Length: 446
Image (cartoon, rainbow, N blue to C red):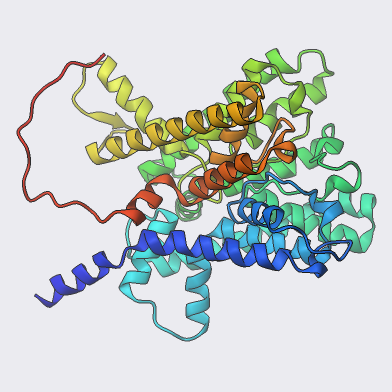
């Protein structure tokens, strides 16, 4: 009886509301702090509309901006944005757990369950150990990235400034945020100045991929190393699907988008755009010059996003993989959905279908609304909503010129994309009871 009472208490304290509220509080705190005169270079108060958009984009690790990060924000403002990126990338619940541990308080079962939901862990057991692994991995990768980037940025911006640029871009890349400080060369230029640098492109892509494949994947790799058969099914699907989603789009970009460029730039641009499209937010080429087929492919990649339990957003690679496998099982007239000699549960397939429906619905409906409001081409508007919902952060150059209603739509999409559409729905509604079931009747589809 006591056990059931405890379970009911945990169940009633909705963890999804806590996750959503945590991100909301983080965003509002960031928005008000960015309004301080010390946060801008000219020491004036930045309008709340712009600080809110910036805080949402940073906390939701998106990268869409209305004020150039390098030229508008002071060192304090940039540091604040980087802090929002770091907390948003790792997750507010992860940071909350760390603070709770440092304060000497015990981590209760409800908090552990909330952490499980936050990072998509398979079970509550070992969640504290996994959190330590996440913190160590994050620190190690970001530090390594900063060290690797320093020689380039030191040469470009000087010894002291090069340290800040190295740290900022390493954290931004690992957290798949896409914020950059290259506006000192040309506002809103992102990483186009390094489009021909094999070294910078490689370091940034490795950071993006490392942050985007998920901490659970790295936990498997750390434990089992090259013993692929011992990996979780989740990890196997993530690695295989991520590889496909990098290689195939890169081939498309290589032959269809950058055919007129020298071979080196052609390869680098193709690979980087394929990697960054899935929620990273940087770009090394002028995306406004991209063809409509190329823009739509990037939009699809942005909606798919990274992997569960990672710093990336989007529907997640595992969602698309499960739906593809489900369709394949129908084509082959098989009752079960199988992968790597394992059977995928019906609940997982239903959830994946619901996520796809939600993302496509919000992506299309908001894109059409912005198209009507701004009188812009539909493909351009869909690219923007796909970027916001997938927390990708790349743009065809219309973000700064959009009206307030369109900015509000983008902020809602960024928040939903980072927190998760299902998390918001679970936060709003209590779980339904299945004490009784209605009669079943078959209908014809397809």
